[in-house]
Length: 330
Length: 262
Image (cartoon, rainbow over all chains, first blue to last red; front, side, top):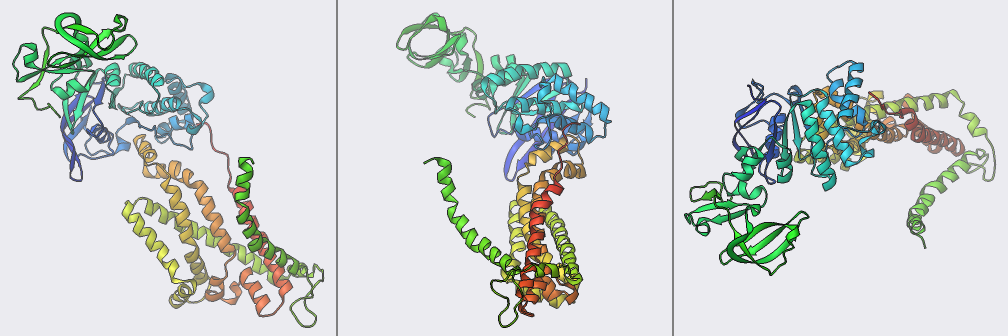
């Protein structure tokens, strides 16, 4: 199967700064791939390289077996949702969605039908469809931006931090809808985000970026359970990065112990330093003689700071770093 | 005291200045246009009331001058806006540094003084309609560049990027995004330029031929060469009417309801 999108050793620099360094990555047709990393890691630059808004210094970009490295944006057939949505302020929701079809010279009837179909798909109420972007809420604008990006049946959908400016509740709701829309349209999707929870919840596959490089790519479960390197381990979810000697292993190796892997019915004595109540669970900080552990406990256990507990550590912790590890301490 | 009342007082100094500097002289001008011409010494008969000055505006010469003023003024405005828009679009595409240099180059000649500029143009072009037009455009168009450039700067580059990504060509982006978004500024620039153009004085006076007199030139001549102040005042009032029409009338001509459905 030909990859929907493939990067080969792609690099880019802004002035003297290497922003993207030899990235090789691909996505299968229909896949939902997230580029996850802290701000400044090069993920948005990578997205702009796919969109054709920037040209790489080196390397090549392929789409469905066709080289696209220097193809201008208007010839790439890529739908993009910008971080601020970039809706045209003088055009109504309908006209924004129609734009990509109109500039392609689609017949008016086809355009009108397709516009309604797209706005139905993103579930924008009919009453809102003749409003200007300024007359819509952030969530509604995002729906319009998504409909606009999908209207001309793009080969690839790019999403640049699409949930960044929405409140938590709306973000969760729209994330679920994005997943549904992705499944309905079947379009290969590339999402850029710094929010690990978002990436874990929505993606088929995640590529973690740091310092212009892809540190690891794999399924959300892969990355969470078997991260390569301490950066990836620490960036996704809560993590204890533990020197080996605490786990009766080589002191030169470092291991990942997730807070939920630690139980409170063991024999390693410790004292609870703090409790962060999170609804269903609570995240504890437990101090033993050598280490401050993050431990997840059911909220129903009602543990209080100062309490004495006994920890049970997992028998097969994942080795995520040590002397030979490149990604450590990054 | 309520907030609106306090802010109401805030504009009082401006209102007083406007009254003293603008409305009082205009009222005096209007009163003067209703005075009879002087029979003995002086320039008008104080205390007299007549409409004869307005009747004299029907004179073919005045009507011709008024018509010329309108055509000339609107031409100045159209050329200034076209030239200004082209320059603003050019500036918009430069780097930040290029924009600063470009704007400085544009405004630098303004420091040279009107007369120096006029003599420069006179030296370079023969007297005539074209020279008069060039002179006025030269005065007016930098202002339209400023207005239009400020409007273009408010266009988010992401909108242009989004349009490209959606498959629009350069021309389509210009026609469907840039042009509609700069429409209000184009109107303001045209109004501003039309006000200047309709009031054209120095260009036609120094660079044009006598038959290229505008109303401003005409009432200047009427007042200061022939001493017919009341008639000059009536001509000035006529010009004022034209200017008001430009301020009030042009926007309503240019307004058009936005398209709402595909």
